[in-house]
Length: 274
Image (tube, rainbow, N blue to C red; front, side, top):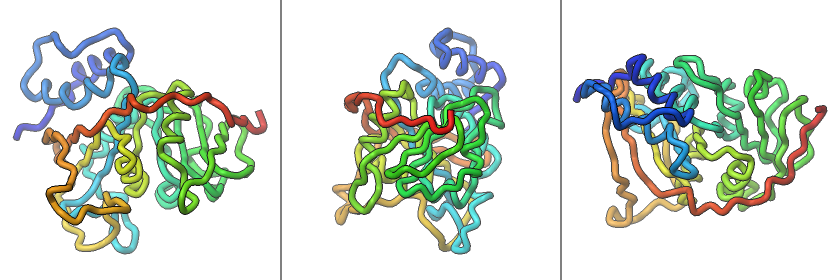
């Protein structure tokens, strides 16, 4: 399996598709460049309706961290570049509060050209401190989803959503809210629990699992559901394409369409200290 070649001209074409001024159907491309276009061009389009992508970077044995919690080098360098490309193609990137607390991500685009997406944190109980990197003001929208009245930094948009079972938030409510805010291409970046909840709710259009050649032997799993199937005949078998992206192998899984999410009114926003 040859490595997909995200050459400079391929990525320029991808960004032109995202901006509505290009297409992937014409051009003199190598086979490796066509593989790269096959990965990213569908996610760059804005004429197909809402798209929700789940992304997981994991080891060969399905782990996203060690038992001690070390997760920094799970993805290889090309797996990290892939993640940054997904961010550059998204309108918004979503993470759960556990990921925000443990990994302190910036959720910015640094390893490729492209605009930073809006940053969205699911923080039902308001646990994330206001000096977290995800709240850094760099000119993009910053949104926190929470139940209560926890004060947030100037410019951060606070969306209050009702509590679901166990105090969590309904993925349906989250996605409706983002769509109503004009954020239609959504990357659910982490962690595994958050991605799995969107999957179990039937809201992921695509699931990208980037597997790095590591055997860890223990630690948290990258993907799990609250109600695992008992029989393999009941397991989800997505239409899957496999790509060599260099240091990692990408499984690009087609799931369902997020277009059945009915837009809800954009309400409950409070821009604190603005």
